[in-house]
Image 1 (cartoon, rainbow, N blue to C red):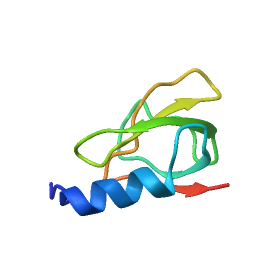
Image 2: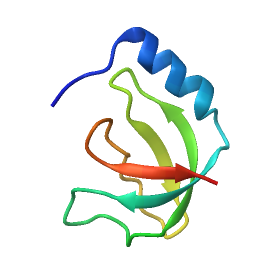
Image 3: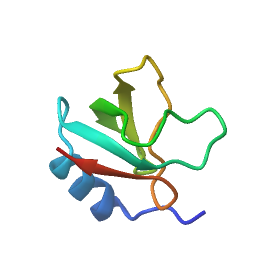
Image 4: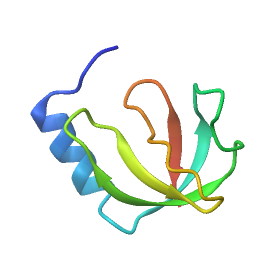
Length: 72
């Protein structure tokens, strides 16, 4: 797995501020919420992962460079 630079992480934090709504497009995890699940971003960690509270109750993060979501 490739980690983002500090600049990339800061750019992600600007693109996905707390409260941003997202929809799941792809997640490489057996316990992932279904594709299309909506959620609310509550942060971006130092590895560039989006911290999301999914509407279905899941708390799995969107991993930088692995998973995909779209901004609503």
